[in-house]
Length: 282
Length: 214
Image 1 (tube, each protein chain N blue to C red):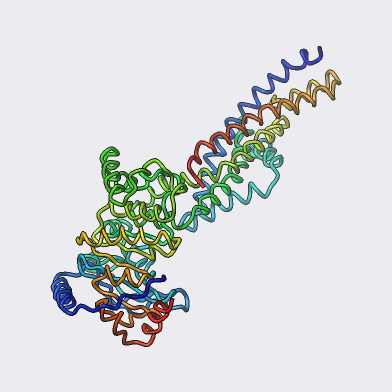
Image 2: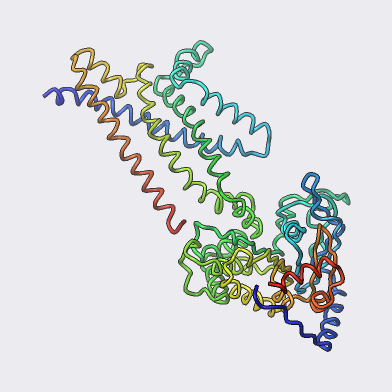
């Protein structure tokens, strides 16, 4: 990244933002991590994390590679199971369910019910290579939501137009650039209307000149407001523009969190100061 | 002149060879998928049983298996007609090899595909049906193509359990006419002529299914 962080402060904006956030916090959180830990053998990647995301809130996770940011998102998407602790989505337990008052491990049916509220965009796109772009986006409406094909394709077309891919319906993923692939992946997740969308380093696998188009699409979606977002990113300017709140991860813990201005202008921990100075230095 | 005399008998044998090839292929195909999935099952018993089947049939000789099913099974009360015994043995044997093709192709589909399916809330069955299998199937085709031809050639062994296939007829003709060179040359050509369209057929399916990819 060649552009330095824009260090402009706007106090009145900040106050408005603050009221905004506190209002949202009064409602039931969209996602609630409660003492979440995750270990792979001896390696503990998440250490008793407590973390909430309000409905509609945009939260950016920053931090060095291997600090546990991605794992936090993967636990929510049910791609990995927490070692201990609980996650609630919209007030309901995700990895557990209560049967006759006893907390037991969630079965596939329960997971599917909660998962419907969550969408995810991956670093490496993970498009379905055997399907056209249109089919990639229409597949979940057809096979998961059970919508008739014609209607599902209409939805897919309108959402692909929104991400600027109206001329690629019949192309296959292998025929697209990285930026186009990621925009298809965003459309594919959006079409299911999740209440929260997870972006796992959506631009890290892209050539530098393609980063902008993808960040632009994500910003547009963020401005529509309704949907909560968890943005895992190394793009500091982007995090500052889009996020209501930023959390800094290091070694499996949230070291610092707050409004983007606070974190980026007055980092308290030396680890965050180091990280930011490295980005500015580039 | 000799060809005209030899061909009708050989073609009679060819009919049996084709029937056995076709039926054994069907059986092998079904078994390959059953055992291929079985080895990936989350249940240990299923994994163990399918691994046992696969290793037994891969680890012993096809000819001995054929003799065992045709000559030894009757001694414990199960007699099969020669055609059934031939089809069963070939099907079980190539099904075992095929299961490895199925298993490795499914494992070769990148993990990100399963994860994208989970993120879009596909049920496990629909993930398999719409995301994993279409990609894995294309990867199975070269392996299946090889096995298909192996199976065709393997059918020549059924002549040893009294089935009047192509090889059997050739052996009989050889004994009565002594036209050894001509007969066995014809035999090679005929096997090749059946194998060729099989190879082309698989390639054709492969091309059709990999539209737009890579």
